Image (tube, rainbow, N blue to C red):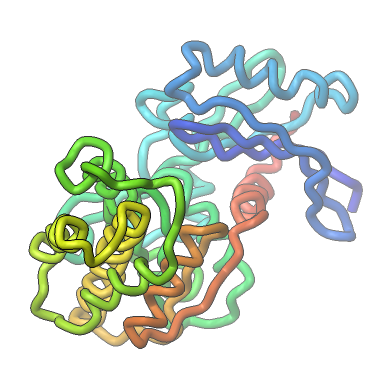
Amino acid sequence: MASEMFITGEWGSVAMKLDLCVSNDLGLRILESTTGPGILSCPDPEAAFFNAIQGWLDRHGAMPVILAGMIGSNIGWRDSGYVSCPADAATVADALTTITSRGINIHFSPGLECQNIFGLPDVIRGEEMQVFGWLANQATDSRRIVCLPGRHTKWLVAEGQTIVSFFTAMTGELEDLLLTHGLLGKGVDRSAISHQAFVAGVGLIAKDPTLSLGHALFSTRGRLVLGEHSATEAASFLRGVLIGADVRDSVHAHRERGPITDPLAVLGHGTNAELYLGACDLLGLHSEFIDTTGLAVDGLASLLSTVRSPA
């Protein structure tokens, strides 16, 4: 087939990443990428978007665009709503919101919503594209737990090509709030990561299944005051407690509700993914690391291929 050029975008609250892509007989390639501020720093998303891609348009002409993330929320450029789970990529593609701006067709992917396994409402917007990109290459109908570590860690159940349900753990934000505004951050040095202290924090959670997160957290303060760890170790210990409890409780909650196939899939990159994988090992869980580089582009490209709209 002839080469087709298009633009994909992951545009969240704090960051924008746009990719100029080409699809042909050789497959999908990212030609160039650019980054920018998130929508919270963009009073005019339309202007920010065209400023970022104008060079591509000047060189290559008009082309279709597909965007995911908070750019399609009620505080973004165009509210694209939500699709209810269970949902696969085809379901999401059928619900794209499309506008034409400056002669360019721009498609906004909806988020996903569900009543999670606890019977509580939950939403996801953006991260699901990484999951769809990964699932597109999975030739199995097994039911697996998928973890996407982050400020708001997402725990999903995927079956075949479908996202069945998910819930959100505010682990990263809770860490930041506790260390920035809480007692546990007093006298703590956050400039370095101590692997030994992180392991100790996860170990505290691992050795006693009756120990709740609320009770474990204050041990960060007790150990610091009593000299059992230093100011530079305290933050890593706290992170270990938080991530250890997140992994332990999330996996247990899923397994209590039905059979799950191992390994647990951890989708991510960088330090966060490494720490979650480490916590899984310390808790005796079989986990698999999936590098998310390019996965969201794969997911978005698969949605755009169903549209086939002219630029």
